[in-house]
Length: 233
Image: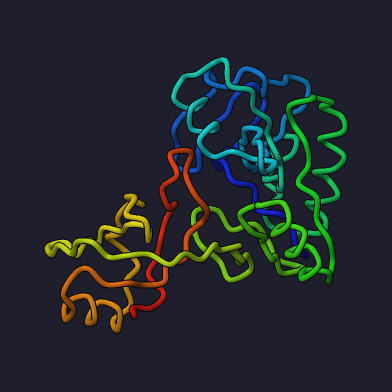
């Protein structure tokens, strides 16, 4: 099955509590997500509404940092426990069915389901591209929920944006590359994600020189978000 990858903060939400996947308690940050009738634990993405896309990562981070005026919503894509019992071992199809039932009973304008489709992954990805969203997640049918690890049963397919850039500075220890636009505007820096071939080229060339970069779009400050060098000219 395939579902949209919303651009926000991964959050686990339960009966009047919430926390990040790294264990940071966020209960007081998001009172809109409190509910008391159902003993469940949901997994999903906290998002803020965007202007050119359904989500806005900068807005989500602003709310996480304490901006109570920033509106949010929670998009649930899985359910880990139900009535104090772990259901992580259930196949994803069963968990999705139970998740749909639970979210409808919670009946909150702030808690919604992440939609999903079977087999039509390419069609969904094209819709994601048209709406400037981050990408999709492909999930293997029959798979269980494996907490705290990256599993091949869930695969990210990112809607990368591609940019022609200028490498204006290369530093070592650690290897860091500063990027500019063709017009000379600062676009950010890169210090991770170099292939062996790219790393060798960076050490052998004299700045400035041009390169092709892929990124997860732009930040609110018009910088490249999580850029990676694809090729060097």
